[in-house]
Image: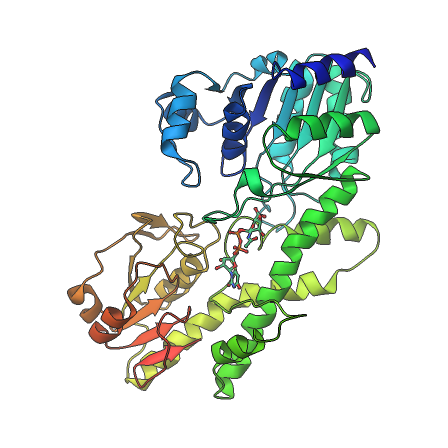
Length: 436
Ligand code: SAJ
């Protein structure tokens, strides 16, 4: 009880020192929000490159205001470091590290494990710890808690408190950001919940508490599984609609007129990003521990895995209509980011389609105003080319894989011999425009 009262007092007086582990698209905005609230923040990252950039005042997260980041960093309100021994200076720690899938598409918990070992080895009594990384339900109590207890020798609920609060960052979203997106929070006990709510309210407008960490973990997985399943559904329907000479985009626009019970998702070349195509498989893996097969997630993942191949068949068909094959053709991809108006190409479907086209002997180039160069999963390294009449006219086929807002549909259509539009950039199909 003593530790709790002391910590709540520090939070109230903004004398608490916050540690954020993982300074990526989740951790850095959170660190900035805490620092902006006037508390001391230490940002921990294992990447020397990232920490050096931040120490030099260079912001690399486009959703964070450069000026704000620069002021906080130069004013030492937010101190980036690779020295995890400084964890001992923190009373509250937020774990924002990646949770990728490994090469066998199984959860890779190594980043969470490494962070927890560093915390357990360095934390002081009276520390609040919140896991934010997307993971399978029961991670906080069955994976994180044992490491913290074993490494620290401390007791949860007395010497430290442990909670889970899923990140809900939507990269590129101009309306919703870390501060105005409600924060779901589940803790192992009432004291942890009270402390967690008090500290999160320094950084976000609204905290929504739930009864346990596993409920909070399941909330996040539901959010992202909902997207995976519905995007895969509309992708599969798009492929069928194409065979039935039905414009799926017209169908969705019409369905959207229903004022209740329908949320529009749009077809594309596949699901990119480091969340939607990956997180649901964390749930699939833990379900098996309970002898439970999550068939919907499995099927949605299966559909998504086939999308690159199916898009390559579309490119093949379009070229065939002009008596050409992929082999020997020049194919220009427009947009390689995993979604419009961002600079992130992780899990981007464009990279997977590029690998398929290269394997078939296609000569590949791309243009993306946000991404100057790429290295695909198969190791194909390509530099972005200018988007102009020459590069368009020089291609046997132009493939629209990401519909960045700056793309001029009319100009692209005017100067291209053949277009495969996978993002509905060009409204009408024609004898030279093939749509998804
Ligand atoms: N996509 C479609 N059709 C759609 C929607 C998306 O093809 O109708 C594609 C996108 O092009 C992209 C992929 O799916 O390649 C994922 O898009 P996304 O916006 O759902 O995913 P993220 O990873 O950028 O951000 C999402 C957040 N998105 C929204 O809420 C809109 C949210 O689910 C999470 O906060 C975040 O992942 C996360 O970190 O989990």
